[in-house]
Structure formats: structure tokens, C-alpha cells
Length: 135
Image (cartoon, rainbow, N blue to C red; front, side, top):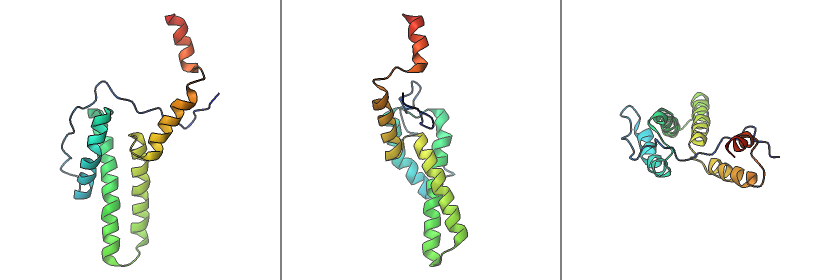
């Protein structure tokens, strides 16, 4: 039996998914808005984003925007500012975590695919009771 502890469930199309990408929130930085415009078409196409998910997507874009803004500040100063480096690292971690929620990274997409492939031959313990009651 495959143990699924720590594995996120697959990201699947939602019945109330948005059909059209909303405009990027105005309060986002230019980098964050660019990230919104870059990722939103794919999320809409996959049918996984609902109105309730927009806050999380906005947070992901904000974290990616912060990473880029700090990179600009570090390059402009020409010095290594450890406070900015730690802040950038935290923003990158946050962005990676949020990206995994929406299947935005190659690893999260591969993990979703590998979990489904591993479980095809084994019965799903969560479905055994349901299949008996329906049969």
C-alpha cells in the first residue's frame, strides 16, 4: 500500500472555475502584476481557479514581486545586505509553497501525475465503503 502522508491531493478542474482571468489587482507592484498576467491564462485554461482562490494567487504574485524588487535593490546597491537576502529567501519560500498549491511548479505537476499512476492498481481505502453502499 502506498502511503500518501504529506502528498497534496491532485489539482483538478472545479465546477465553479473562472472562465476568464480577472485583471490584476491594482495594489500589486509592477512585477507582481506581470506574474499575475503570466500565470493566470494557464490557471484559467486548466479550470482550477475560483473566485475564492484569487487571494492565494494574489499572495503568490506578491511574493514573486517582492523577490524581483529585492533583487533590483541588491543589484543597485552593489553590496550584499543580509537583511534583504533573508527577506528575499523568505519570499522565495512563500512563493514556492503557494506555487505548489496551484500546480505552478514542475515538481507539483509531476507529483500529481505520479500519485495517480502509483495508485491505479491498488484499491482506495476511502472509496471501499462508498462502493459497497452504492452497489
